Image (cartoon, rainbow, N blue to C red):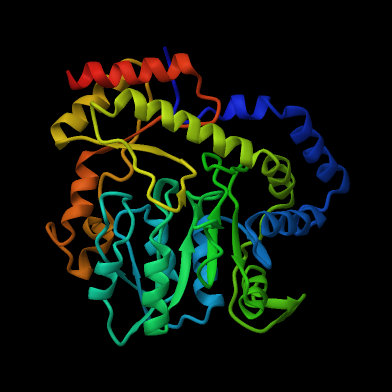
Length: 368
C-alpha cells in the first residue's frame, strides 16, 4: 500500500467543480493582481478567525516579515523565537533587519517554553514569535504575561495552526499580529504559495497593506520601503472555496489523530493536547526513545510504502547558515532531543481506517 504524507488530489477531487468555477471566474475577469476575490477572501478569513483585519500576502515567510515591520520592529531589535521550527521564521526575522534569539522548547507540546523566554530577555528584546508547531497552540497566557510585563510585541507564527484554538480564541488573534501560510500542504492550502497577516490594530493593518505593495497606500506614491508580496487573485478564489470546509476538515484531522493515538499509545509517545487547547493537526508527530529507533521506524515505513517526514532534522541553532551566531550542540537540549527522536506520519482529513491500520501496524512492526 502506498500512502502519501498529504493527498492533495483527493482533496481537490472533493470540490473540483467549485474550484474550477472559481478559477474560471477569475480567468474571465483577467484581474489577476489584487482582484476583488482577494478582498473577499481577506474579509472571510478575518471573520472566520474573529479578527478585525486581514491582509493577503505572497507567502507565509513574507507574512512574518511584514508583520514584524508593520508592528514597528527596527534594525538590530532582538526577537525571541524557537529553534525547533522551519527556517522561514528566523529567515523573516533576519530579512526584517532584526536579530533572532533562540529559546528552548517544552516536550509536551514542542513549543516555546515561557520560562526559557524570560531567560533570554535583554534590553534589546522587542518581540517574541511563538510558533504553534504542528498545529498545537503555544502557552499564550504565559507568553502574553511576559510580553505585557516587558513591553514586547507578540507575533504568532500560525503557519501550521490555522483553525487551532487557545482558550476558545483562534491562533493569530491573541498577539499583536498573526501570520499564516497557504502552502499547498497546510490545513488551508492554495495551489501555489500564499500567506496572510491578521491583526486587530488598525495601524498594523494599514502598514501591512502598504508593505505588501511596494510601500504604497496610493498607486505610484510610496511612503516606505515595501515588497512585491501580494496574494494572487487566483489563489484567493481557490482559498475562498476551501475555507468553507475548514471546520469539517479540522474535525476529521482530530478524528484521525484519535485513531492514531489509540493504536500507538503503547508503542511510542503520541501527541498531547493540553488543557484549553484545540489542535489543528497540520502534522501528526510521534516521539521514540532514541534516534536509532526513530531512524529504523522511518526506514521501515518508507520501505513499506508509507511516507513519513522528520520535522525538523536539524534545529535552527545548528544550521550552517547560523554558525556565526555562536550556538553549539547542547545549547538547547530539549530541542535537540526532539530533532533526534520525532517522526511525522501521514496526516490529512481523508485518511481512511484501512490506511490508518496499515500505517500503525507498520510502526509496531518496526519498533518490534
